[in-house]
Structure formats: structure tokens, C-alpha cells
Length: 234
Ligand SMILES: Nc1ncnc2c1ncn2[C@@H]1O[C@H](COP(=O)(O)OP(=O)(O)OP(=O)(O)O)[C@@H](O)[C@H]1O
Image 1 (cartoon, rainbow, N blue to C red):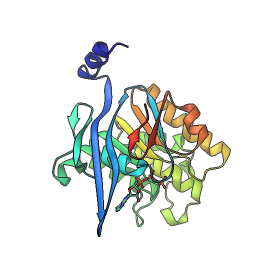
Image 2: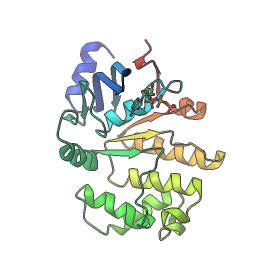
Image 3: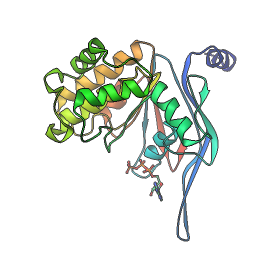
């Protein structure tokens, strides 16, 4: 694609997510860390992108800025054509609930709600009608957890917890899925299942961006970006 046709594609809605010149600093006492130093990237609809980089290169900070969980000091993030950066937190949360699925290593499940209720809550936050049972069943089937719908998070094994988190991240049928180490501690079979699910979201015209160390995930991505010292390597 030429630069001109890429720009045209972004204007006509083919871009699920776009970030330009993101900067993020952290100050701890006297010390300042430049975690992101002008990161630009985009994810097209139908595309899977992996961001890889050593520990401390800025992957989690980048993911948080892309998801509107954190605010960059400079630059901007657009999701499905809407700006999510530089807005009040409540507006970012609303936009995230409607358009973004986020899977963090720290988990995204509410402890006192069972798996089904967690999915329902994410759907309700996105403004969807409550109780869309077939949607919930399909989500649970997608992550092979139909039998665990009524389990509380603390009753799930590690791999089940990761898959439940993925079902919640997908509950709002997001324009873009952002996932931090989505296959973290999973066994080979479960890992393949999760990767197939991510791939199927892209095939359905959504954008998928994962940050990871895992070479299997890197292999499955359409595009791999290397982050080092807060910069995407050329
Ligand atoms: N809240 C914070 N306060 C101060 N420094 C921070 C904070 N969060 C991140 N940093 C620093 O910013 C840099 C990037 O951190 P980040 O967690 O984004 O890297 P990462 O690539 O995700 O690392 P890992 O793979 O180990 O999770 C690091 O130097 C880190 O110490």
C-alpha cells in the first residue's frame, strides 16, 4: 500500500486503532523514566499485530495508553476514528466499554461475580441489552468454558481464568482487542485455542494487538513491531 492509499484507508474506517507520537514519563523522586518516546502505530481491521520487546521496554505502558487506562503526556490515540486520549477519565471509560476489549495480566474479572455475570456486566457497560443468552453461550464456547459459567474467579484454575478474562474482553464485540501476554501461563492446547480465537476476531474484521514475549504469538501475528527503550524499532 502506498502512503497515500494508507492515509485514505485510515480515513474510510479501515483502521481499528491509530496512535501517533505517544510520550509517557514517570517521575519517582528525583528520577524520571521516559517509558514511551514517540511511539506511532496502527492496527487495521482484520489485522493481528504483535508488539515485542525486552522487559522494561514500555509494552505495558503502551497498552495502557492505547486502552485509555493511562494518559500519554504527548501524542494521541484514536479508536475506530474516535479520539480516546486527552479526555476525562469517565469519557475514556465509556469509549473503552463500547469499542475496546482489554486483557491485562492483572486480570479483568470482578471477584464477587461469576463468569457469566462478568460477561453480562461488560455487555451492559457497552450499552448492550442484558441477558443476550446466545451471545454469552457463544463466548463461553469460544473459550471452552461453558461448564464454568457459574464459577467465581477464585474457583477457576489459571488457564480457565485467562480464558474467562478473554471472554469478558470480547463481550462488547470490540473494534479492537488489546491483550497483554494473552497466552501467559497456558498449556500448548489452551494457548492454541486462545490464538485461534484472536485470529477469528481479526477474520471477523476487528483489530487485534498483543504485547508479548511468546514466540508462538509472534508467529501468529500479521505484523510484528519491536519496542525498545520506548521506541518502535525501524
Ligand atoms: N508507575 C510507574 N512509575 C514509575 N516507573 C514506571 C511505572 N510504570 C512503568 N515504569 C517504568 O517505565 C518503563 C517501562 O515499563 P513497562 O512496564 O511499560 O515495560 P514492559 O515492557 O511492559 O516490561 P515487562 O515486560 O517487564 O512487563 C520501565 O523502566 C518501568 O520501570
